[in-house]
Image 1 (cartoon, rainbow, N blue to C red):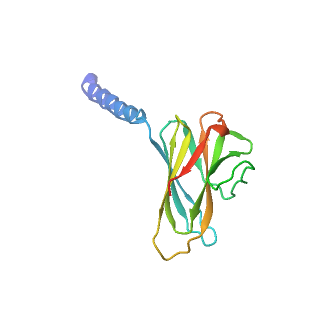
Image 2 (spheres, rainbow, N blue to C red):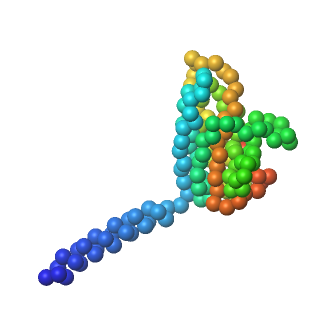
Image 3 (cartoon, helix red, strand yellow):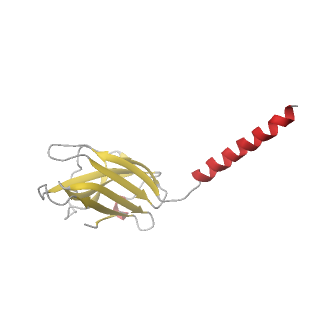
Length: 151
């Protein structure tokens, strides 16, 4: 009597485990999402990070911007996060018209590629420094990172 109901229950449990396990083994890209908060004239800005490497563990959306390192001449750069060896600030020049930011990280060449979707008209065309903090599974070498703004 007991074996009659036990067999379907075990089969169901194995099927559920296999379905869950297979979805957890899916490879990159991994997506991290958040929204930069509204500040003054700036509306909230949705941000998506697509990790092609499988090494990113967290996307953090800071309120304070990092200082530009002395050796950096442009508005798009990577900067150290004080006291956190496995994280990096990714910084770019956005605008008041920005509606969505997508950041793609490729691990092989350690490049962050930033693409911004902006509204047409109805806002001032002014540059705004934007940044996120990307956390990795192990300590990182800041000098190896490249940030490209595709806009």
